[in-house]
Image 1 (cartoon, one colour):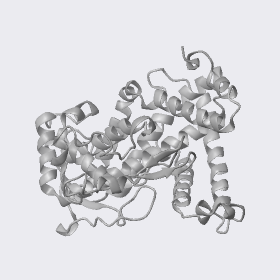
Image 2: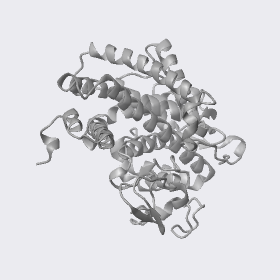
Image 3: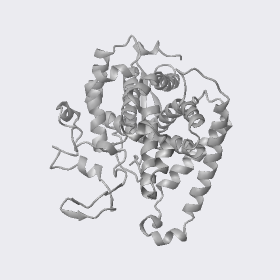
Length: 405
């Protein structure tokens, strides 16, 4: 039997004298915690109603904005971000930080500003990342700002943790933070407050902007290809109908919608350069000798647009994924691949598919002034659009009755 089944995680870490090994072991254990407590299929099934409610919350907002039933302008960039953020915080903390039903507006503003500051800091290029000798200089004050942001974030999360210690909830509706606090009671040496803060931040950062960016690129492609939009709508009407709202259980039946999302992930990978990987031993990559310890970067965007791998690589062709082998192996890797692949892949696909499916099921969509959506790319960790997506929509009369207008 593996020692994982006998000793608590913190003890396993202590048994390894090599600091690098301990650090790697810590990362592995944290990944296992997040996978089991939030990202497993069982856990995702239990939290599907939360994501469904957040999507419905967004649909209600858009229905109200449509007023008398005509076309209304929508800032989809901000809507997608708020949806992704609320879905994550509802699963982790049981509360929203965007929208009309925010419980504590002042608290929400503080958290929004902290997250906005964090994303702005991590997007900035720091010469010290390329020239380590500059790390002790901090020419642009980036390190000082990041430390201050981290300290303020820890204080805010500590307040949330203290708040949740006093809340008693049923096992069925337990948020992730309650599960982590239960684990802290049994193994306080490992499940420290810092570990809990880290898990919350990793999930928020990794699960919010990547999902919202994917929604934005996918909707942009559909708006520029109305025939594909019509095919998605026809598929939803055929498999779901208009007598009820789409839910996550419908997604496996919506093959064309899945193909569209895969094609968007191929053309506009949410993380064009995958997370760095360190060579664990001497190896050969692309004919080059790579010594152990070398940091390797995988250019997923280049792979996804390689004409040697893909036919018409820059063309939007969802039909290419009708072949079962199209997304196999190392061809489509927006979330990485193998043991080091992103553990949040299934969560991302669920929220993206559900949100886009609900938007297309419930509304008619057009570009503003009949002009194509600008597909220019901005710089950033998640390859955002240069020009945030705006579009116009109107209610589908047959769907209005399902929402509170």
